[in-house]
Image (cartoon, rainbow, N blue to C red):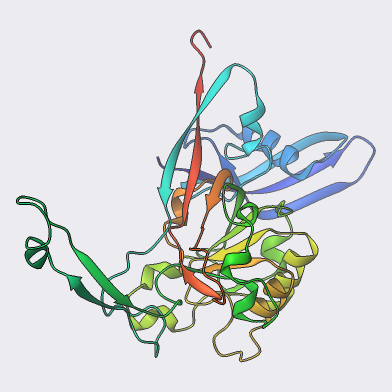
Length: 314
């Protein structure tokens, strides 16, 4: 379903004096035919403005674009608590497919998949009409869409087997959209307005559009050191990104990895399909096998997305 946003200039006057002006302000709206009164009310609500006397809008345009999560807007998850509606859930795939010899990260080898027992050979082992295939796979843990545990960075950190399911499965998700931004950095300014405490924070940068090409690792989006520190301080539970690395690959310090994993916050890299998620309200899962002494392994990452249906008669 196509989503819409409005852009406008605004001047707000307050009943106790003073004015607020905004130029090129953007908010999520419900559809292409939204009126200026509704846009003005949503503008006031999104900023939490009090004692507003009058709002004047100018140069208002409405255009198709994915919602960013305007507070009190059409993608605000607070509707889930409203009475008179039932909520069902659908699943959204967020993982890349793993194939033999695929390149996940430039310079690292792709997986090698070879047969251990072919279907033809298995016919001599089982009853007539019964056959199986068993295969070997040799691959790095850093293949496809994968999760980094603290052990990936720190010798005394939790390995994959030590991660509690509560840090990996059915996490409330917030999607931070920076796709289309003029900078490849996901910095503090992109994060500060979001409620990230105890959530899976999923960075939708659009970097996955270059997956499988040399451009995937060229000038790729990444989380800044200040952004990572903010997520640690605010108590994020997991952080994911649809890019080649959560860090700038030119920065050998790997500050985002270092800060997040030191705080016990798992990192999921090479996500895809985040455009299908709402800014908030989805539940995120990315659980690797329980492998002892191992820091990184592919996951089947997915999200459960709520669909609200009005009860009969509403």
